[in-house]
Length: 445
Image 1 (cartoon, helix red, strand yellow):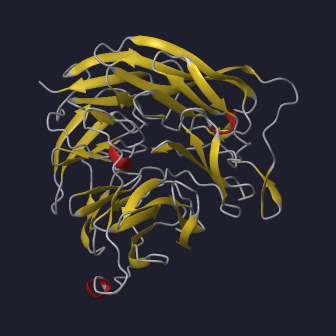
Image 2 (cartoon, helix red, strand yellow):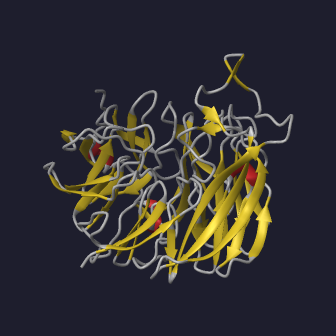
C-alpha cells in the first residue's frame, strides 16, 4: 500500500481552497435520467426502494430484451429506456477493424470480436408500470468500425434524457436523439473512435442545454470532448484532447464555489473544462493506468480511480485558479470495470471479486479493507447505494446487501437467477435490473 496523507488539516487552511459540491441536475428521486442517476453518483435518496427479492419475490415485471448490452436502463415518468445490440450476418467482404499499434507493432486483443459481423443497434422504450415494450428503433444497422472485447458490447454507453428527448450514444456508429414517442429528432455523426479492439464504455451527460460526450481515442490521436445543442444536434463547442489516450469513464459536473467544472478522468491527465464553453480550466496527473471507473465528488473533493493494470485512487481538493491538490492516494482495492461509490462519510471500493474496502473520504484513512462476500463471485456492475446499504450485483445474479458504515456486514443475499453485468438503476420505489436476457422491475411490499 502506498498512501499519501498530504497534511489534510493544514490543507483546509491554505488560502485559495474552494468549496466543491455536485452540480444540481434538477433530477428527482422518481427519475433516473443518466448513468448512475442523480449527478452520476449511484446513490438514491428514495426511501421505499426494495431490500429483498428473488426470481419470484417482489418482481413486478420481467421483460425479455433481444441482443446484448451493458448500458443501464434510464427512467423518466412512465417510461424506461435502454439500448441493445444484435449481432447478425457476416460483414461485407473486405470490411476489417483498424490496425492498432503498440510499441510500433500491430496489436489486437486476443478476445476481440465483432468487426467481422453486421450489427443492429437499437433503442428500446418500455412502459414503467407493466414492462411492455412500447417501441423499438434501429439507430444503426451495418458493420461496425472497431472490434470489442467479447465481454463488452456495442451497447455499453448508458443513454441520458432531459424528460423530453432521449439521447443514445453508440460510439463510432453515431449519436441519436429521439422524442418519447420514438421519433428521431436528430442524428450526429461521430469521427471514428479507435477502441484498441476492446470497445467503448463512457456515457453522455447533459448540462443545461448541452449534451456532452467524451471521445478519447486509441493512442490519443484525435481525442476530443464535444458539446452538442440538445435541441438540434449542432456542435456548440469542441475541445481537443490530443494525446489523451482511450478512456472509458463518464465525466461529472461539480460546482466549485459557484463556478461549474466538467471533470474528466484519463490515464495521462485529470482535466477540468468549463461545461458551457469547453475552455480547459486545469489539468493534473492522471491515474496512469486504464481509466474505466468514473470519477466521484463530495466533501469538497473529487475522486478518480483505476483498477488495471495498476490500482490507484486519488482524492483531490480543488483550489482557486490552479490545478487541484492531491490530498491522499491509495493503491489497493479497486476493480478493472466497476466504479466505487461515495456514501455518507465513506468511499467504498470494490475489487473484481467483490472485496470491499472502506476509506474515510476526507483523509483516505483505511476503515476496513477485507469486506468479503459470503460465496465466490465476480463483478462487472458498479456499486449502488440506498436506505443505508451498499449493493453489489454479481455476475451470477446474486446481490449482496452490505450495511453502510465503518463495520463490514453482509445483511442479505438476493438472487434473480440470471447473470447481471450492467449497473442497475433506481427510481421511486423500484429497482430496475438488466440481466443477461431480461429487464427486471423489483419493488418491495
